[in-house]
Length: 173
Image (cartoon, rainbow, N blue to C red; front, top):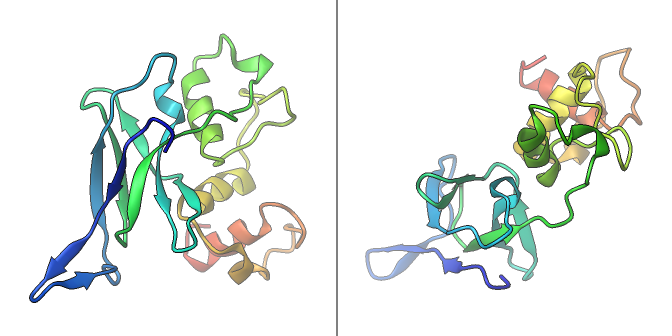
């Protein structure tokens, strides 16, 4: 992917029978990767290619600077690689904030967004909606499966509504 490595992961057993998924289980993968000049560790993500040839970022992946590797878990094997999110918003209000690196990490993965295109508002309290949205995005939920819910204070058209409904169905909220 660009100048970054790609790995075709597969497992076979018996007479060459291929394992395509792990049922309800998962496997943790570590891909070796050394940061290129100018790259930020928080912008490095694992990616996989789906059956249509589309590259999908794995939001629940991270770069380990000690082992120089990208870490993630998956429930299937396919073509995986190392991706880099260059379209991370540049927030003017995080330049000297203690959580700058962490904010860049969660926004690079789309787990959280800013309060505008130029501000993140890092000292604003996190709401229930923001929290479960980040969890739901990390879990890669299908938001279409959680259109209705029982909370009277959550409007059906709110961006966080399906995530609140998902979190309620799982006993998180």
